[in-house]
Length: 103
Figure (cartoon, rainbow, N blue to C red):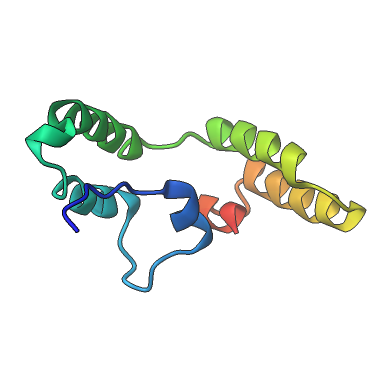
């Protein structure tokens, strides 16, 4: 079609691909669909900044803050609240990895 593609990280998070590529790999692939007339200079700067951010190590405290913030928005039932709160506490105590916290 000739249109520049945009990576939707939220869609990717909820519907991961079967290819098993990282977000950074997808973004690099999508960046190749942009031409100079599409505003490539700004998009390249944006994607480079995003790649840099994605490559940073996430601290346990940062992940816990983010998880608590998201949990406040997502918890609808007492059972969900108990499950999510328990998982965050397990992560805080280093009993589970970040990947398990995200599930």
